[in-house]
Length: 135
Image (cartoon, rainbow, N blue to C red; front, top):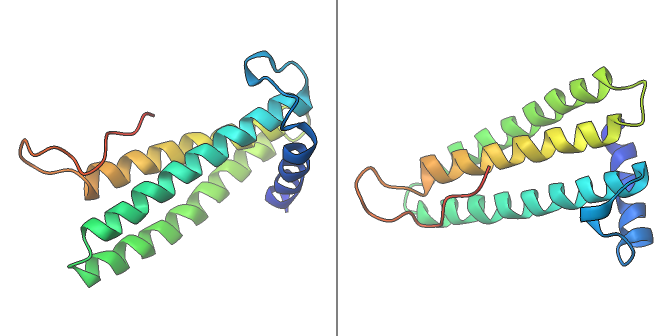
């Protein structure tokens, strides 16, 4: 349920604030949460690009593609459970939203790097399929 509250808040904030917030100068809870939500959306979009490219790059191996999909589903469950525990830890304060969003962003960036490292790079000096994502 916490995720849905944050999602609704993030969607509302996106429409209400998108033209008015300079994330380099965010100072109140609404702006900070909005900016954290923007970072998460960007991280998720990047992860989806790397995930799609990994499937395309390895499309010759149907078993591997299925395994990547299973792993991604399991990772999504893990990331949500883990970040929900962070939300619970901070449940008494207004910081809980940004802590949850920041946790999800960090986990997403780490997952993107794992996808890149395992499925889009080579063991030799061949350049990777996509550039190394930043953590």
